[in-house]
Length: 210
Image 1 (cartoon, rainbow, N blue to C red):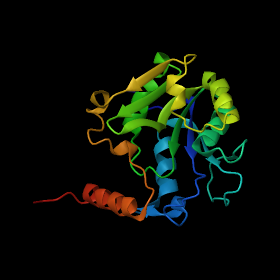
Image 2 (image 1 turned 120 degrees about the vertical axis):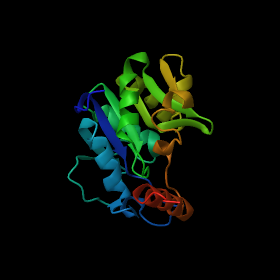
Image 3 (image 1 turned 90 degrees about the vertical axis):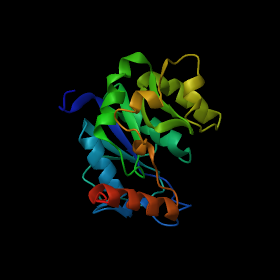
Image 4 (image 1 turned 90 degrees about the horizontal axis):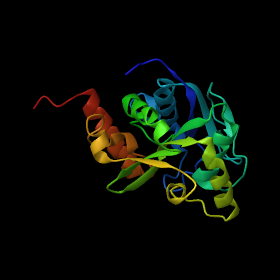
């Protein structure tokens, strides 16, 4: 697979959560030598020519050299951030991820990109459910997103069931050769999640010699 940057898909990093369960700004927490924000940005920039960060309207400013967009419609959660990124992207496609995903993997992301002609949404379905924050979305999703927002239904996975959209589900067997442990989809919500991610990172940096 080519390692050149993808120019017809925009990487959208959602970084506007309230971090309520963590109790502090997750974007600034470190796994290894990088903050979660920096790790996620680096992963997206290794794949996409265009990368933007989306934050909530009432979220504190962040220090980054990436373009920062504020939610067009406030208080709509991740759906609002995704809508903002897709609405303002210069490309028809976006790949959306959250900034609290410490193990985003460029090869796995590129696999999703390779499937973009198979549906309007390309999303993983793992044993624990759909993964809307590691997925591709076409501009054709915008009207459906707008209807969900108007209905105050902020569940992104509703897109998968909408009859007007084509969906390509990525199953565990599709990813086994790239990410057998599905670490790409890990996210950090609590202090325990953070400790677990740091442990996984440490094992990757210093593999056991036992």
